[in-house]
Amino acid sequence: MRRQTCCVCTCFTTGVVFLALGTAMIFTIPILLEQGLAKEMVLKEGTRAFTFWEHLDAPSYLEFYIYHVVNPTGITNGEKPNVEEKGPYYYSQDLDHSDLEYNSDTTVSYNIEAQVLFDRLRSVGPDTDRFTTLNIAAIAIRDGMRHMPSLLRSIAAAALGVNSEQLFVELSVKEILWGYENAFTRRMARLVPVLQQRDFPSPFGLFVDTNNSIFGPYKSHTGEGDITKVGKIIEFEGERSLSYWYNEQSNMLNGTDTSVFPGDIQKDETYYFFNPMLCRSFPLEYVGETQIEEVDVYQYSIPNWAWASGAEHPQNAGFCSERCPPTGVVNISTCQLGAPVMLSQPHYLGADPSLADAIEGIHPDPDIHNTLVEIERYTGTPLRSAYRTQINFVLESDQFRSPMAFDTYYFPLIWLTMGNEPGEIAASIRNHVYVTLQYITVAKYGCLAVGGFICLCTILYIIVKRRREKNRLQPVRGEIIRSSFVNSRSVKNRPKSMVKSNRKLTNGDKQGVFMVSDNYEDQIMRTLQRLERMVSTISSSTTCSGTALLRQQSQQSTSTTSSILTSDDFTVK
Image (cartoon, rainbow, N blue to C red; front, top):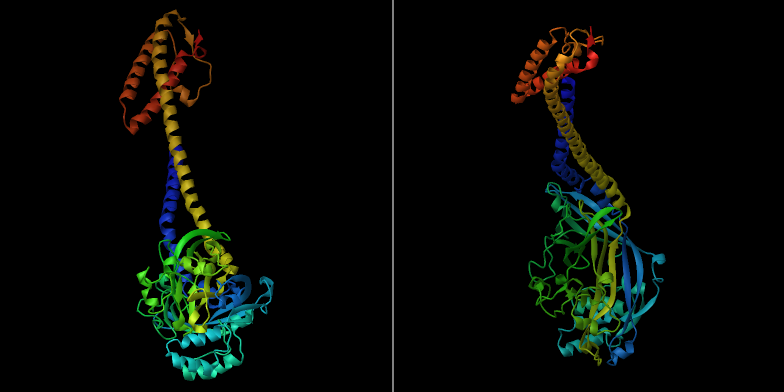
């Protein structure tokens, strides 16, 4: 009996321990995991985040789509422009954080080195494919003279030879992107700095200074002490703010350089990124979630309000002071040597409908033209991204004295995707974060399940055992009383002489066996009196000691009654 009690107590205690352990894991594991991730996400040599951040192992790329002008002559005669898109022209991109220098204020200074290489297999054609496009060099020169008096503008145009330049030219993909050089661009490189007090690059192209180039220096937070600040840009090119725009808010350096985002990202937070080619910071807002190679990611996109005009969205008022374009277009001429460069989403997605209506061949599609950044939720690592933008030039009819259908066009040149694929980062995060989380989840709920099962089984065992004892005692008491009275009435008919039972007795049986002789009636009556006293004692007992006594006396009474009432226990002399 004592051994059974010890086993029951041990089992119940074990179950409680498992339940306590599982409950403790529910509350403590998230804290420990957050602390562990915070250490590994610091941009410091020796951490896992630093390994991927220093040399961006995620395959980066640039995809370009070129707009071919179908009717260049017709446009100068007043026809509506008609363009055809062709692409992608795919360039792999190698990005490195170099010249690292750690500062005492938990920041790191660095440059970003960028190298691009054309990938013919992923492109629709060679980069020597030729397109009819705007003569952006001549347009940039003419636009720079728009503030001159009419007479001076005519003299300057004649001196520069702009009047002889055509509105449209034929260039290859390579020339459009990385620059081309001819007699006109070489002449402009000599004369523009003198006449217009600004630089004029030669060769001249949309991305002439971005291949095999260095961006920076940057100064960013390492995340040490506060993982929510990891990668946050503090300075760019030695300045804590930009100087392109027209108020303090617009010139703020917000967000990261897109290589990393704060850890433990939240759906209701707005995150920012800064790209020097875009000349400003852009916001990212949550739009959904999915999985990449069994890793949970949150999806973010640039909201339409970021492209809205200051009239529609006052927060954007500082991005324009004059020559403000319609909603959906951002004027970045102030950071492009004064060239009339305008940014928008591809095919004027989300922009004023008049922009797409003015040009044939424009078909915005959110699934294709929207920016989408997929960020791993715990570490803030961008596993897959596609930053999409379109480069437009302002084309005004009075610049070339052509009878165009509109006075001003925001003419599309190209649109591009700056992106990256998961690469080895997704597998590394899955193996080191998600597998660990799976083990912890199994251990946590396993402890709760095992503990609950043991406790439940122990409680059920106690309940069943008590019910069996209760059911066994109740009929025994009634049977003893009933059998005793029946036998007391029929005892006179028994033989006068009886002998001892020949059955071999155990120690338990010896307590209840009576040697019945000629005075067996007196013995039976005494036995009945003892049984009545025991029944009275059992009924009035309510404590644990009473329960124990109940078991002992019930066993005695059962044994005694069996020995008396079982006919096999009697032998007639």
